[in-house]
Amino acid sequence: YQDCERAKQQKDALKSLGSEGLFLFSSFDTNNDLCLSPEEFKPLAEKLTGIASVPDFESSEEPDPNSEMLTIEARFQPLLLETMTKSKDGFLGVSHSALSGLGNWKSAEIP
Image (cartoon, rainbow, N blue to C red; front, side, top):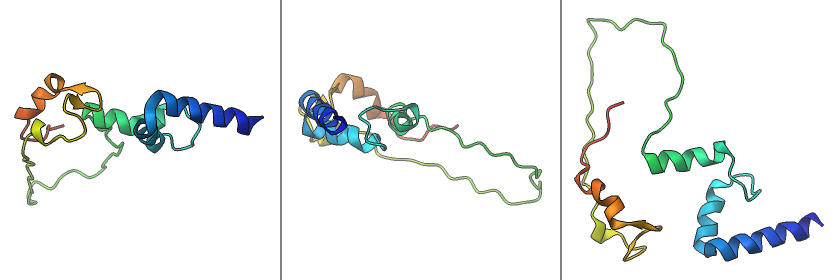
């Protein structure tokens, strides 16, 4: 019975999402139960929002005021909408107007 039910869920998911959509969904559904738990959704949410969860760590050491410090600044080329090849109307169902702010994004956010 469970195998039959699972096959029906797979068929319904394929019909609803298409093969590419089901492939993308499956890449986040790590336990293959056709449901995304908050832990499974977390990487997708981080990619969509651009906000990564900060690992919890505490340092008991005070920084040495005489030590050297290295500062790294990230810079990159902003998104070029004409290079997006998945869709002429947008990317994964997202319109070009929704992505327009990424055209001016040239440096990483400072946490």
